[in-house]
Length: 482
Image (cartoon, rainbow, N blue to C red; front, side, top):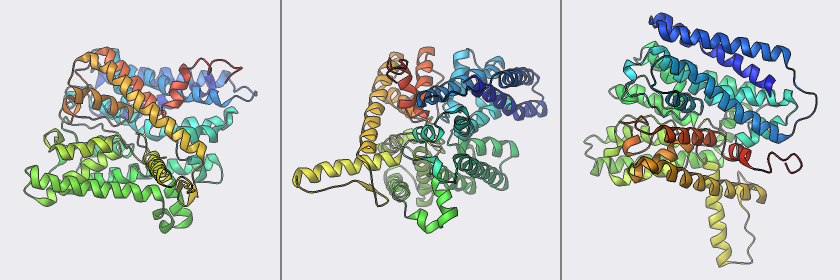
């Protein structure tokens, strides 16, 4: 564990250098000093630990892998929030912790009241944390597990739940390297496209790092709505959000077996169908009841918001709090769905939703025809009963977590929609909700207690709930039972 944490600290220190560069370019002396001090401290501590601590030759149990993944996320949040707090942008350390946690979990929820007056180096660091959370820390942790004598392939399967990133390459290391190359390519491609379509290099980098990692951080108070007059930028975001919400295994399938094989994937077809149907329904509702004059503008806004919510990116171009109730209900349903399995997005994941729908259908069919043999299949393969049971257990824990979280957040005294949607937003790593956590607001008004609760929910959601909550089990800490 210590050896892993040493490498993590070194990586975090190195990742602060772009923010240091931005502080130098924009003459931000105070943030620069704090970034430099934190980066040096991280790298020195990390190199000392990795130099003098070596992994034990004793084979660790899988449960140790769960603990490493969880503690890596918590440690990264504590360390990453130090320069944020010292910069003076946040009144309390809890606010800085919430902001950093939101980044590293790719949630994109913010507590900064005025983004445009914040130091540019801090805004860049926020986007870097999202990028790290989207893939860097996941890949880093998973890649190290085999070398720490922990069952890495099982861990990556549990972490990416409902999809195993280990089947892209011949080995797990090859799979991780391939996934990381895809991630880098998408980030560079989006940044270049945004620059070509009129963004400044700084804004293109901020949004490129954030959106590809399915995060909602921006450099403007009104978010992507700042560029709503440029349709090329908006549609570029739509395309890349759809790509980021797809199962990354499919890119390996395209490379090995061609695009036709990938297009036959059941989850992908369901994912695209949800986007298409939801976009058309919301677009029609906006044009007929939402006050939109242009059908093309209603289609564009609907497509952007649908892909943003479904991929859990959490960006916005309009204030959808003013949309008709029908359109808002569709967005709420999409928020409860989440992106594809093995994608960078959060939420229950489409594959789980699809299996649950098939399970409901099986129950109905068997009620009518008790003697019929009905198997649940995906991509023409039977889903094992154990997998179906695990998915059912996850969905129950998911609902239970939202219910308990909503009760705790209710102490703020906000309205029902704000309370529930804020919890859903954090558990699903979405970053936006409705009413007081909608497009024109953020989590600034929440109490310190609520921000701590929401931070825990963000980490739990990012770690697929079970990975995090099992640490609180008495059986987990008993070596004779775990």
